[in-house]
Length: 159
Image (cartoon, rainbow, N blue to C red; front, top):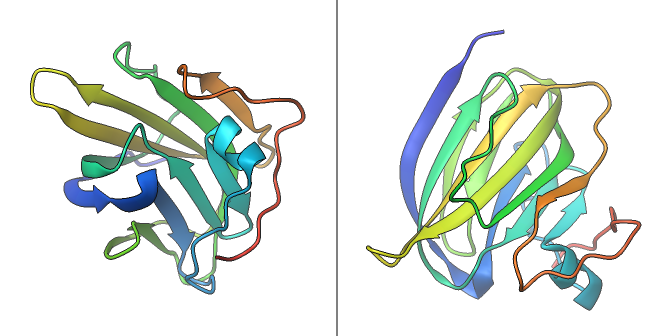
């Protein structure tokens, strides 16, 4: 499988979230319940929103290829299934703006890795897409704002 990197993109994370949307989705972000907030993400087919440490500027990168070795500076990391639709377009989005990238259609493991650079007071996140037929959602790194319970909620309503 080819390996490719997109970004960095600069986005303004409003309401402490950043999302990945499939190009075939309805383009609406997800509604968050208290359970979603505790687990750090809100998922429905075609749209997954991840909680950021706070609202503010966010440097975003997207990698396509193999599963990563997690960045030791990451404060949260979450793996979920994600299916790229037939158009092969994916958006990295916040409430007011989005960047579009092209990926091969099909099922992926999507890892969200997130942290902050304390010296520059800037948040960052990296999305890792790797082809995978079956993906078990998992909190890989949880920070103190998170208190996920089991099972993880894999249902959300459009906002």
